[in-house]
Length: 215
View (tube, rainbow, N blue to C red):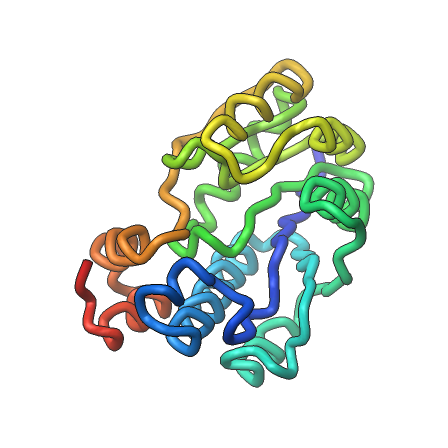
């Protein structure tokens, strides 16, 4: 099997629009800075796989935190606009846009701690599985890999951002299905604090420390 494409589904980290739940604790500017740092950390891991990288982006990058750093980091990957009305539709279209005749390994920008090794593990599992899922600790999922990106169409029947999204997604994915280790995705400030405590080398962890680093 040829090397898959790493797909990052991202939102421009614009203050007031990015990480709104974090913003309630630390303010809009810090929340957007965290989101930008998390995206940069995720891009590092994706590029380190040595595989093609596609970023499906929405939002105005000109208004984003760390806009210049993000433009530099995005310059050597393919960036495509998100398409669709619902989040599920945008995910389905993003997989189609990232398809290069081989599999797709998709993550978002809520798990800055993701490593190239984890992405490669998911991609390698596609040799013997049609789908690979990484559950999130809050009941969602943080990673979805598909041998045939057209299988992402099943996501339109899944309600996103619930405590049962991960289980519902697993139920509609084609067999054989493999699973990788669950991960904490960052929605609340406690999530950011926990990730920063365990992965101190990340840009996102530095944002947490600069913000006081308190739960």
